[in-house]
Image 1 (cartoon, one colour):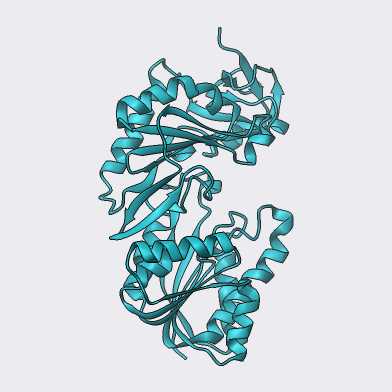
Image 2 (image 1 turned 180 degrees about the vertical axis):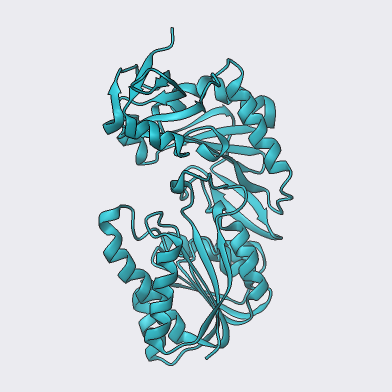
Length: 387
């Protein structure tokens, strides 16, 4: 028999407004076993839908259905099938992309990425973890992968009281897989690489950057060389920066894999190197800023804003008139308006006149759910410096 959890008036109003998470502070009555599927009602016992329950996380309920719709036995397979079918309509020019994007595919806290003939999944809540014995066979049936890797080592699992582990749950998965994106070959480390191996959410932004790139290019926080290698065909020279020796080695290997000889990789702290390049009088025609999340919590926001302004200010000083700056933030807590204000402040401080050519976000295979702002985390501006 399905257990019932009652939520407060505030929680019910939040849900009716389109947000699909109920926080523990808005649970009025009822408990359930870890990861259970529960019925959700308001304090007047009116049905609000079904949800996956967590007995540890501050996100106590992740809605699966809303209103009168009830979770049927075939629900999970049907939603997986719909997610896979949607990606097939996108015309993705890559062998690596996202198949399932959690709540935005109505599969809360489940992430599935395709890397060629292999899948990498993450179950980020008790509910998703509990469903894996049902989800894995469905993915095998729908996608026929050679292997599926569960990259369940994300820190968020600790908040759910879940073990962090990496394991092959179907077939065989090699340590590294070669994938192709926009005609460029990349080697992905599925077991240890960032996220599930690569930053797949930036794929379409790398496409855009390559269309504008020319002359001398500076690729900051390069990671695996995604932006720089994509643009190397239209640039005279690319300087790729990263503080990680491992990342720099990866960029060099990917450059060799593609026969690219005009990419120089430097192991350096990007903040320090931007200042040194400015002092040296270096100038570039294209600059990419793709830093890690500076604000992983609201408390970190002031310091993050300062950091984003610093790198954008330095980049605008280094950018030639007529050049392009592709600048990004993957911090959910830095919304689009705030990011725009940061970039504008940097332009004012450098005396630059800058136009916005494009406002971009994560790729279409990482859709955003209206009403759930947490799904809109990646902001990307393509800017042109007039003077």
